[in-house]
Image (cartoon, rainbow over all chains, first blue to last red; front, side, top):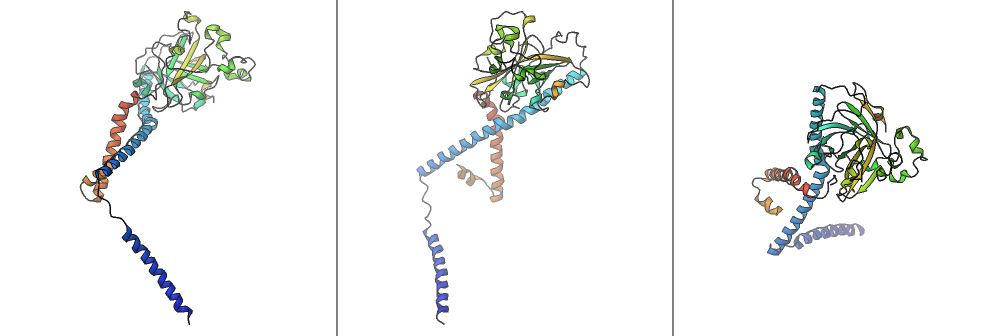
Length: 305
Length: 51
């Protein structure tokens, strides 16, 4: 009967110590020091910095997500306006030569064509508006004024955002040679195909890709149309001042080639690298086919990809 | 700044929380719909055209 009391003692001690420990902690808590001016200033600066950080983060959210929502609405309105215009207009049947047709009446800020890139999925479609100012590009891809119209000889050029505002041209860098870009106007479908890339130009004839059905009508332009088109390849990255990429013959601003000798090109421009405006990503494509618009008809190219 | 605002919010705790949420939402909306759209074109992120 010696051990039991010892155990009790031990337990008591243990709990006593525990209580003491917490008691000590409470007593040791320092009283808050008086708010000095310096302390207030430091805290104010710190809170200011945190606030600015939050604002910058919020701006990223705005730029990448919120502008998408705002633009989606504008794109929808533009598409609805285009649809109602197309359904109310009297369609004159397209002339015999489908590429020789009356000019479209382009009004700045109004959609005049629909654009599809089947390899991006069949949900990738945008109404193209006339004009390339910030206001226009918020609605969707914008057609450079004074460049060719869809299906015309020359260079039908379109700019589009790569980040935010619907980001129509987000994946433009993924386009490969022969990928189809389909443009629909009220009366016609135009199928453009991305030209061979710079690295593919040299060995195009022996390249297995050139034998694929999707590449019918696609060849390096320097071999089919001569040296003037030597610099016109599927994709290029240029500096923002190089407006010559949207010239009727890209990179040949001063060339005087009669329109009937000019290729029917499509050029897409967007910013590069993503999130930067240091350079421009350019994609060139050539028209390979066109179809008249008919009820229920969808070009076979639309199901590619 | 934040504690100063908190101290000056009137009413009991639950009301202060509601007021704080409304205040934050208002500032976020002001940024999203007024300040950012104004500032965005001035920043070099999203120019996609060539000159």
